[in-house]
Image 1 (cartoon, helix red, strand yellow):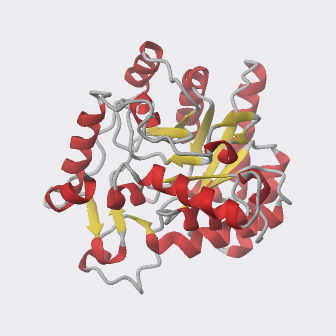
Image 2 (cartoon, one colour):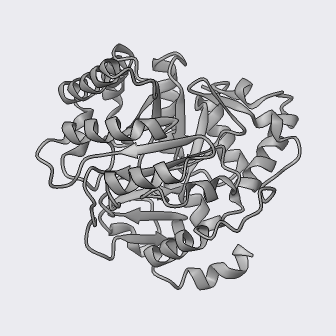
Image 3 (cartoon, helix red, strand yellow):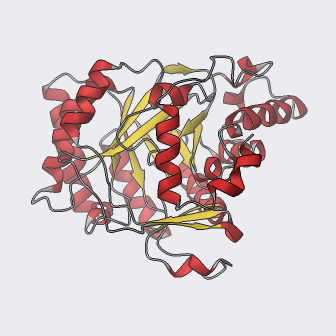
Amino acid sequence: MFSFLRPYIFTLDPEAAHDLAIKSLKFNFLPNFFSHVEDEEILSTELFKKKLKNPIGLAAGFDKSAEVYNSLFKLGFGFVEVGTITPKRQLGNPKPRVFRLEKDKALINRLGFNNDGLETVSERLKKNAPKEFLGINIGPNKDTKDKILDFLECFSKLNKFASYITVNISSPNTIGLRDFHEEKLLSELLGKLLELKKNNKIACPIALKLSPDIKEDEITNINEIILKFKIDGLILTNTTNQNRENLLDGSKSEIGGLSGKPLTKLSLKFIKNFYKSNKGKIPIIGVGGIDSGQSAFEKIAAGASVIQLYTGMVYKGPGIVKDIKKELIAILKREKIKNIQQAVGINS
């Protein structure tokens, strides 16, 4: 069905097409068996000591304001991450701000954390409890005077609804956000988050989402800080505002974060490096260029406990999760691996 509709959908502005998808999912019309595949039990895994039916997640950025997460679970995702959520409602950057690079199977966005804000999202989550494993991605407002306070406010109010909270320091579209990769600022941010967590007896795990544009020599320092503060997980990686030289599409010069196929090798390298650096002690959520069972397996074999996708669904449609599950199961059987957890890090 998607292959039939895709030519029409791709005549729409990317953001208009996205809004149409959100409106469609609000009807929650999909049957529960929509994404079922045989032998899916060998894909069952764990994240933050909780069981998942499979390791395939939807990355933050699709359901920005937590409107359709329960409908998204019906597509077959093992987990869904919503957001980025900021304390105040935020319209984001001027349009147009999303661009398809069809020749490269990629997107460039400079959305700027557009979302309905903390209070509205909290009410939504309160009225419509997540039915499965839900991550919530948080960040600061563009015009805030204190980014750390914004992170603390969001974490304090949203943790009760989340299976985990993602601290997003990696978007290239918020000025100054990536400064948190520096040792002093990162230590201050994580220290205050953990103090809040301890003082309020909050059990919710924290994942840190990193940029793919950090230098290799920074990995060791960042990893030491992560281990010092006992962060629960890493998301590797967000979009890149570099790596344009080999792109084919005419939109490659647009300012913003690049996602999709061009990130495949880059994110894979980061997963391998961090997996080796922390010796597998910290769960990694692998993101970047995943659109098939093979690309998902490569991320897992490199050291990712689970994976996330977004741009792949833009190009292949909502049936992508079912297809990836079938392909992953076939790969595991071919390699005589009894469960997906046994594949984590085997090629690192």
